[in-house]
Image (cartoon, rainbow, N blue to C red; front, side, top):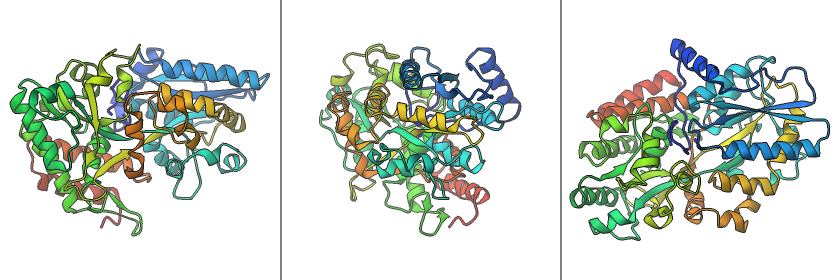
Length: 465
């Protein structure tokens, strides 16, 4: 959900793609291994003094802050635990292939790492598959757990009431806009649309007044994966006032709402009126990379519905250094459909550190988590990865508050943010959302796409209302 923006983006959450299958997946994983992207894949093995940590390495070779951070934590851990070793296992792959590889590793005690980086988007599916172990016994005696906010804790909690991961940050989403393009279009530098109509009107104004510029990007389609579902349709759906995807009181997935149709119709409008990228670009799996390294820094895009982490692409030594970004870009909250209370909407995701059920050294793995999550390390990580803090002490830290232009704005969206249904079938529902979005992006009607989604939902889950 840093995913979690789409998978190929330099810095993007959530980025997951739907898991590949069959021969294609075999080829992808073979290519990953052949490229040497996976180090130390022998699993926990029998060495009781070594903890193996599997994590995702960005497919953009310019992004190595996670490697450097974890290497430093490794040194801290080994100093604090004489005779113990931490072995880092980076997996360089797009997120769907990373998830598939980790799941493959966790199936056997011979290959299971001791600690694995898990997207909250996928954690319940892995819990349901029996890949992860509950951490409650460790958490109950850990003096730092009380600093974590309840919403972040809930993201790693399963239907059985137990907690399976320790979150290391979250994110929020809103509107980024180019103030220089807005000035040419006669739009204000302190722009804050009050409803969907005002957002679309601003995009139409850019199209008319600043030809050649993409007015608005909304991630869409199957290739965008969770970025399309969460950053696209759900940012719209949760602002309609309709029942969202899942009704926890009735324990039913929701279908047939006007809000879902309205959200799809917004996407249809963006692409039918040519307010967004050309559909061939919008449906490109690498659209997030194009947005972060070309469209925005080169003044080709006016408005992006995107995440709190986006600025990390343009910082010093980032994938696309852009010193002027902090003054060129403004941020605005995504409005609700008609401006109804609370007036704005956001979605949040994040990643967790989880211990596989077949890990050889679970206690040592949790000791590594405790080193990861000292307050000092938590601040450093949230700053380095442009995360929104999930610890109250980190959120109040001056270093964090000064870390990134816009951090205060995006942190301020937390009170009105929403989380995806933390259920094992959600990834399949997300795929169905992407299919519905792709239909309207390529000219289909919202009503037909919504009907196809409803039919698909009923085949995925029982009891859809």
